[in-house]
Image (tube, rainbow, N blue to C red; front, side):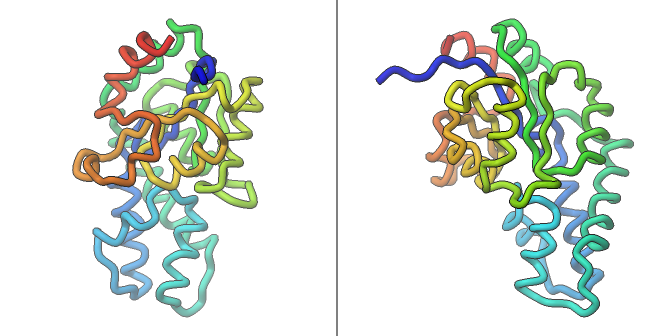
Length: 221
């Protein structure tokens, strides 16, 4: 059976468009450490791709602390991340060329992220790429974030494109699960130190960076 025609590309944000995963990990580590949790930076990989309230829930379930307030804890993490992005945020390699390649191939462009509107605004403004996107969807107000597929399904709906005709680009395993569950084509661009892990086999394609997307789209069309 032939592969469905590609009509749209939907990007994850953190770790795909902007080099923010290390910032998220540091912010979560700092806040959890202040709450008295015995965690390491390596532990922060466990929640990559999850929505921030789910991150807080995850750590509270593993090691409960007194005076639990999910919203307050999540906001402390978000404020730290937003501050860093506004001042020091850097695009991932190949972002602009990837977005331009999508336009040149007459593909609609979407954003499907677990991050809040505050962080979306900070990232898109910092990178000056807002105008490229035909639809921007966040999982912040949904019943479930990634790995649930709803944010991807919502983005496809906003683009007026059937999910099977969408290509999702992710750096996290949770994000890939969400995109696969939405019945989308998928590309994984994991962090280099984790690129050889077997779990990325669930992606239809694995690339080293967004710099390779233009060639992929040219070949795929």
